[in-house]
Each structure stands twice: as structure tokens, then as C-alpha cells.
Amino acid sequence: MISFILALVALVAGYIFYGRFVERVFGADNRPTPAVSKADGVDFIVLPPWKIFMIQFLNIAGTGPIFGAIMGAKFGPAAYLWIVFGCIFAGAVHDYLSGMLSMRHGGANLPDLVGTYLGKTTKTIMLVFSVLMLMMVGAVFVFSPAKILGGMWEPAFMVNSLGQYSFWIILVFAYYIIATMLPVDKIIGRIYPVFAFALIFMAIALMVVLFIKFPDIPEVWEGLKNTPGGALTQKPIFPCLFISIACGAISGFHATQSPLMARCVNHEKMGRPIFYGAMITEGVVALIWATVASYFFYGKPVPAFDLIPGGAEAINDAPSIVNLVCREWLGVFGGILALLGVVAAPITSGDTALRSARLIIADFLKLDQKLVRKRLYICVPLFALVFALLMWEMGDAAGFEKLWSWFGWSNQTLSVFTLWAATVYLAREKKLFWITLVPALFMTWVCTTFFFYSPNSLGLDLYVSYAIGFAAVIIAAIWFSVWHRKLSNSL
Image (cartoon, rainbow, N blue to C red):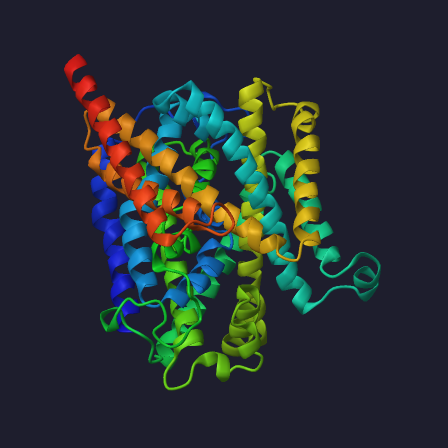
């Protein structure tokens, strides 16, 4: 628990000091924001700062800082280091700059931002890549909350006629359609703050119980080996930990969400608490769940999965672990409210993911979105493809695992493109580009290595994958050095 306390303090200090430093590097000022200059009453609309923060936090949270942290905790105390350093120096910087750059470019979406700084070809790749990833988010974030809710209750006649979880899948999917179509202030602006409160309540409640129990769990200084208390995972820490814990450290998905809120902010100075602050808050949630999972997997003298009824059967099922822990620790009322937060997070991330996909496609087609009819032109085929992806996921026994693996890799790869675009921007503006260059190089190594190593992609030898990943980093560093030298000579 000492490692947890130190990590918690580090995240708060990171927001106060490094967040302010990043804000100064960027140079937030008083220029008009797109929420004011391009107000349309649908996507560009001024919202109160506290509400934007809550929506941004819920949009980026999803199941990532919960399920990802649980799976990442199997790697031992190394999870703490990745959450803290990844969140402060990579994830929060990534989210802040993607939001602020969108604001500076009239509320531009991610493919347009990447195209501006990395070229038209990269923009086209990013457009296709972003839409495919957002569709995967929609499919993944239908199934995971449906599984949690289905474990609590669902109509027997629906289970018998359409299969398990069908009732909740249909309900969540119907909500997606409505929320994606309506103006941002009709559903998202009204109910998301309530769901965000539930998610924050869950995290605080679990943290209080952790301090009451103060369990004996592995500390960082005891070693960073994979399995401090048993063979729960045989995957190597690098690169697998850095893919497993994405949303709690750095996530490219966030860069698709930041433009949504960049279109609702009326002052650039709100960027640090909204974008950098929401990411730090998500890091705290991930930290809490990583600690809960560490106690569940490796608590001494007896791991919690042996103490909680049904725990041993849930070791490899993150949603079941969430159910068991919330019910055991928080009682009936607290458990329901906590689970509401856990369920709301993926549902709300799913619908804003599809909203982002709609806006990205609309910008590419130059199709105005004020009229409902024109929104339907995009939403009908988009939701049909997501539904087909969901049916494939449910029809394949390993569908969820495969889709989550593809989503995890594509999610982190998206962050690589965003970080490189931000690096080029900072270099052109003669600003301190090292704040994004270092995480860009590191995540290039992670994503390249994982692509070649993962059995769901090429499945090469681990050390061969390390070498290829490192070679990619060297090539990227040389490319940037040559480009930066030419840029310096031309200025």
C-alpha cells in the first residue's frame, strides 16, 4: 500500500507542476474558441467548465482504467510505474495537446490535425484507422457493460429466445443510436455528469475500503518481475503491460474525444483542468483498481480471490472481478452505485466514440450535420457495420479477446500518430518539442514490438520483435532529426 500512496501523491503533483509546465510550453491565451466563433447548437456549443470536465472524464474513461488496470495488475508492481509515469509525461500531455490543437484549428477532428502536420497521405490513413478503431470501441463497449448487467439480471424469455445478454445489448445499442444523433447538450450534457459522479464515487469508495483494510500487497521495491505471487500471466512486461493498461496511462482513443469538448470550451485557460486534469483523474481510477486487483491476485498471506466467494473462478474475467469486489466491499447500495459507474463508463465512451466517427466522416465528406436527415446518411451505414462487428464478436468464442487485443494495439498506435503530430507542431512553433518527442519514440517502440510479437498479429519471437521495434525507433529518430535540421535551416 505504500507504493499506492506514493503513486497517488505523484499523480496529484504531476497535475500541479508538470501540467502547468506543459500549459506554459503550449501558450494558452485569450483568443476566441470555436465554441463561440462556430456555434451551431448541435456540436459547437458553450458548456459550463465543470460539466465539460465531467463529460471529458466519462468520455475517455470507458472500461480502460478499470478492466485494463485489473489485467495490468497481473504484471505486478510495474503497473504502478506505468500508470504514474505514463499518465503524467505521456497520456495527460497527449490529451492536453490534442484538445488544444483542435481548439486552435477550429475544433478540427484528429485525422485533420494529423494531416495538417504529418501530410495528406497520413491523414487518409488516420481517417480510415480512426473510424475502424471507433467502430471497435462501439462494439467492445456494448458487450462489456451488457455482460456486467446480464450477470445481475435479464429477462428469461429474452435469454431463451435471443441468447444471453441480448436484452442489454439491444438496450445499449438503441441508446447509442439516440445519443449519437441528438445535439451534444440534450443527452451528453445532461446525464453524463451524473454518471461521472457515480464513477468517481466508486473509485473513492474503493479507495476508502483499501485504506481501512490496508492490505499487504507487493511493493515496487520488491521487484518488477511479472508474477510476484504466482503464475497468473506468462506474458512479458514489455510490450504487453503497456498495451494492457492504455486508458489509465496513455490512449489514442482520447485524441478522438478531446475535439468533442474542444468545441464546447469558451476559454483556452480551461484546457489544463479539462484535458490534462481529466487524464490525471483517470490515472487515479486506474491506480485504485490496480491496487484492488493486486490485493485480489497477490494479497498476503492469502489472496483475496480465495477469501471472496466465487473469486477463484473469476481470476481471468475482469467484469466478474468488478462485480465481486463491489458487492463484497460496498454492500448492496454502494455496490449498485459503484456498478452504475462501471457500466456507465463504457456505455458513454461507446456512444461518444460513434459520435466522433460520425463527425470525422462528415468532415471528410463535407456534409453539414445541422439537419437530422444528413446525420442519418452517416449513422445508418455506420451502425450497420458496428452491429455486424458485434455479431461476429458474439459468434466467435474468442471474439471479445481478439477484438480487445486489436483495439488495444490500434488504440496505442493512434496515440503514436497524435504524439508525432504534436511534436511537429511544437517544433514548427519553436517550442519545447521534447515533451512529446520522448513519449512518441517510446510508444513507437511499444506498438511496433507488440505488432510483431502478438499471436493475434504476426507472432514472431519476442527478441526478434524487440529488435524490430528498436529499429523502428532509430528510423523515426533519424527521420525527425533530418526533418528538424531542414526546418531550422529554412527559418
